[in-house]
Image (tube, protein in one colour):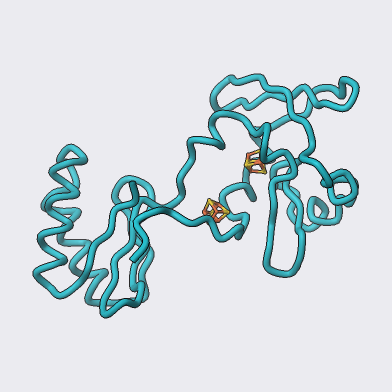
Length: 161
Ligand code: SF4
Ligand code: SF4
C-alpha cells in the first residue's frame, strides 16, 4: 500500500486560483506574476513543450476562475504549464493528507486538517465522532485517535509522509 500522495492531475486544486494568481507582465520568455494569497511574486516560465498548449485558452473560457496557467492536456488530464517554476505555495500544497482503506480498497480520502471524502456511511459516522472527540487536539493526538479508532473498526489508515 503506497504511503505517498499521488496527484491524479484532476486540476481541482487550481480551478479556483484565477482570483489569486495574476500575470503582471511578460518579460522575454518569462511571466512576472503575483500570488495575492501569500503576497508572493514569482517569475514563471512555460515548461518545455508547453507553449502550444498554453496558447490555447479554451480551458479558461470554460473555467473562468481557473489559474491562468492551467490547461487541459486531454480528456482526463489537467496540467500546470509552469510546473517547474510554479510558486512556493503550489509546491507545498497537498490536497490529501491520507487515505482510509478496507480490504485493499480506498474508502476515504483525508483532506485538509480534519475532513474526509467518503461514500461509506459507517466511515462518515465514525469520522464525525472522531472530529467531536479529537478535532480540537494537536495533529499528533488527532492522528493517533484516528488511527486507533478506525483500525479498531476494521479500517487501515495511511497518513501520507
Ligand atoms: S493536487 Fe489533488 S486536487 Fe490538485 S490536481 Fe492533484 S489530485 Fe487534483
Ligand atoms: S501555478 Fe500551476 S500549480 Fe499553481 S495554481 Fe496555477 S496551475 Fe496550479
